[in-house]
Image (cartoon, rainbow, N blue to C red; front, side):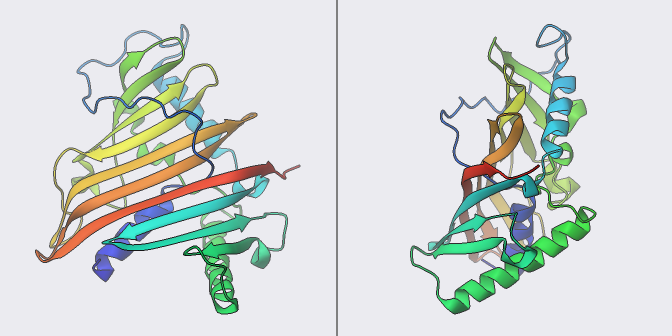
Amino acid sequence: MHTVLYTKYRALYLCLGLVAPPLAAEPQRIEHVLTDTAPAAPVDGQHSIGQLISRAIADFEQRGRADWSYRVSRYENEEGQISSSIALFEPTKATGQQWTLLSLNGQPPDNKQLRKFAEKKLAETKQKQTENGGQQSFSVKLRDLIQLDSLQLLSNNTQRFHAGFAVYLSQLGAEASQHLQGSLIFDKQQHYIESIEITNTASFSPLFSAEIKEFKLTLDFIKIDAAVLPARQELTMKGRFAFFSTIDEVSTVSFSDYHYVGQ
């Protein structure tokens, strides 16, 4: 992938998510067609869809990464070039020792790879702490991603409701975001967002000479006790750059072995 384009989408990918094992059951996906009428009545007998989602986002945002240890599995396929890694995060250790690379492309890492990984993670940690006032936090910004005033109910039952919403991704810009739409699945029993899916409705150009024909971002979440944590993230992009370079990337991140280590 062209370096400029790759850097732009790498930033998008890293900012949109973190963590955990796949959900036990994959919920049914909803049709990517928004209805013309927003729900007039409460969807749980008391609260409106906007109130429920806003509260769920607030609950998610209150959970910091420093409260949990977990294992991270990454997989990337960029135009047929496949890479993978497994890492362990232990927040109770010193800042420069919290991340441990366990596997790189299916093999134990050598000393050089371990050192490079540690340096990269330390730099990322310092940057996130600066952005979040010295605190560790998950980097998903759901309140920015989901346009709350655009939420519309698509289906509703006793267990879950499905909703559609307009999307704005600052990493892509306002014009590109106009060609994106989102849907989410909300668990009414446990009061959290189970999954979010973002897809494109038409081709779009996030920068000069680039055309994205297929874009799909899926975020799954898991609830452990009272904590809502990211569970799986998958990003698919297909298109062209400068008329001759193909964009074809699939990236997934899943986290497992959550252990609460907070006070």
